[in-house]
Image 1 (tube, rainbow, N blue to C red):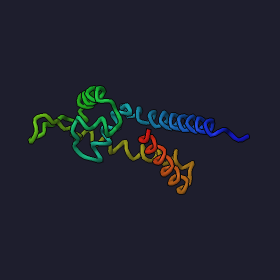
Image 2: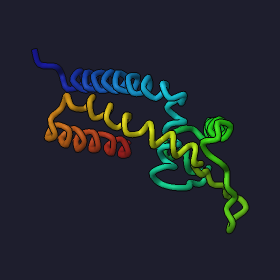
Image 3: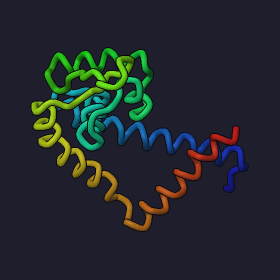
Image 4: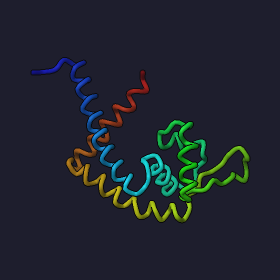
Length: 146
């Protein structure tokens, strides 16, 4: 039985949501094993791969509301994974900088995180992954029209 276009759109939304939730929950369990929550992991991963970041911009880069950002930064600083560093050129800007302890943790955690995501995504062939990337990108960008 063929679905009406609107019903097919709803089905796609549900399937996409459930797939994301299942994958996200699995990955988050892996992250929790290292004593981090997903947001803390995202901040450490960002700082590790992209270098020092202005505190005001981190939330936007990891898709977190700015109100929660201070709490996450405080927790990471308390665990000695990051430090706040004042910008020498602009007193209004403070950077988050990963510490050696934070760097060692992410270097320990990230390879298994990457491997686990690859293992999950191995349900798709390389061509299917590329097709999915293009389709989901198109879908995400289309939202900006509305």
